[in-house]
View 1: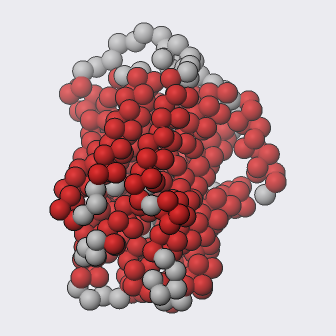
View 2 (view 1 turned 120 degrees about the vertical axis):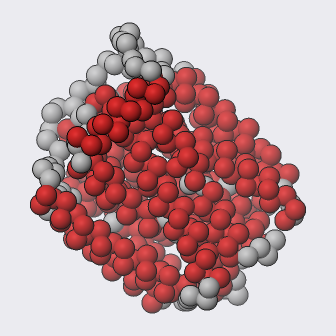
Length: 417
């Protein structure tokens, strides 16, 4: 574990641009999820239906699906810093109005703001993931993706965990205000960030680049399989499920905000420490076993889901393999994608991933409304990873899917301000 941590620290020290991007990423992603507990707490206090809670969760991911065909082309055409600053400003101005929402008649405003805010956030995420293979390669790219996934996982779950305590102590409105402040800090850091100058090069028009990507998919069929493989990790997006579990089983034990915060914080322990412990063991041969572990841990969680304390404990094991699955499947896709298509392929990958998460969120709400128990829903989510394990074995046999070779991934001066 210490050896892996030393590798992370060594890479961050050697690559100043990656170090600065990671610091901004930590604040921005933390902010993106910080107010989520406030949103779900607000919805539960409004006593909305499980389907409305599930739809809110889906709205966090749907914007990334709709904008992907356009965001990928824009990423391949426009300087990254200009896009990053614009997206951060949008997130700030879509967060502050959340303070106005205090009753169910304003649900339309909540849905609109969540849609806009998470659209900017997912665009930023896609942009950052397309930057990494442009500045690093080989083993360094693998390590950078692991760092990125640890930060994302930490921000995603620990952000909601901290928010749970903040909401409990100071209320929903203050949580939204603090969230906007986090984005402002990230924006200030981003404005002083310098990218290496990119040489001027001719790029095709929007429509031509759009058509090129479809030709690329046809000529490189393994790419679509790697995208689908990564999408299976979307079955671990438990936002709606956790909110419904807390509301159904734990309100007699703990306050809603604290229950949400504790559930996410315990899973964050597994999400953050998992890749540090098992990251060096992951490769194309061990990946199916990690999918099977994820399946078993989620199914085990289903059997203890009604017990608050056992559920907290098992949440650690549920999160243990998720980050590594996310980062390794992402790295496989980057590794097998041609450089000139990074922005578009990453955008399409995020589109499929986010569509999976959105559909799962809606399905959870629909199944609850249909009378299916939360435990059975959890078992169904876990079973998807059994399918993923056998699917990857098939893909590995049919296509030339190989591990990342170490090309001494040096910085490439191809980015502009």
